[in-house]
Image (cartoon, rainbow, N blue to C red):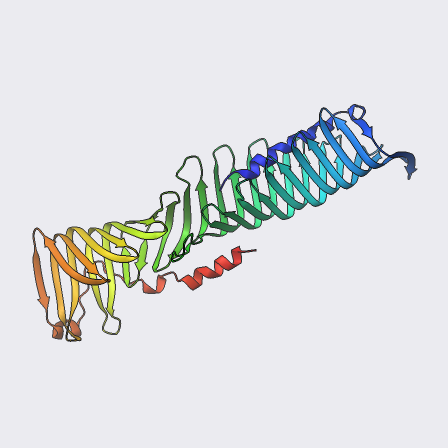
Length: 419
């Protein structure tokens, strides 16, 4: 997410030229002028092609009314404020010179350096340097990045902006959308966060690719370098095709295609479940390339749900390697253990338990081609009559199938993020 909101809003400073004493604002042109009173207050009305100027800042409108006692200027019809190439337009504007406060409404539009901000209402306080826009706020930058929100507040002194309700940030360059109900952006550090139904989804860029969806309580972004880092915090759930995951913290390095899960992570791919202290997922061209589980790594694949039979792998580290979405190799390192249930002629025929320093399993069309065990090899065969009576579960076994995020669950968030 680029800090385009902040870049645009800084240009509102040019309006402060009108905060000078009234007699320093020069009337350039008006078709007609009328002076009268309303309830005893002197009023000056300028109509037709009204143009006033102060230090290169020009204000245009169809009609301008000056309430002398209240020190209030009202501009109506085709209101336009111009400084150099920066243009602010609206149907109506109200300016208070003493408090240096201006409000605009109806068809509010700010065009600055190719950035276009639109809303129904807006205001700016030149003393506090606080600005606000509300009702159908939309910002489009030169790269066609689009930001939507119900309202936006900006503090020019700190470079800090807040976005409220129905926040949606769309980046066409990588087809990513971030939604939520509240967001803050810090221009100086180039960081931001979005929360309250935070959701990120990255649409496929090519046919055959899967949509990446990440949901969490809060999502932080850091654009200070080329990495483009997102951190999802709290009840994180992710789905991309056959890959799904859950954890309490997830870091997504968008430009590198790397997803890191921490705090009791679990990852599912097809029929496989992987758990451990930490799990890293590597995507290449939006496709799963590698899954690396470190610390108390455990892989489970359900063989028979009725008999509670599970194929299991356990070790200090487990790596899954993929090619074109298909599993090619599984490597289990450091005190590796493997338990696989066997079939013969379509019937269950027991289970093999193997341990070693390393176990390498190779697959063809997602079926086991061969298993190789290196150093300190030990093994044991369990006949079917034993495993049928009591299925074998390795130490620290756990099955979390009910906690697996589903595409349908997260698609509901995608729909709610599209306006």
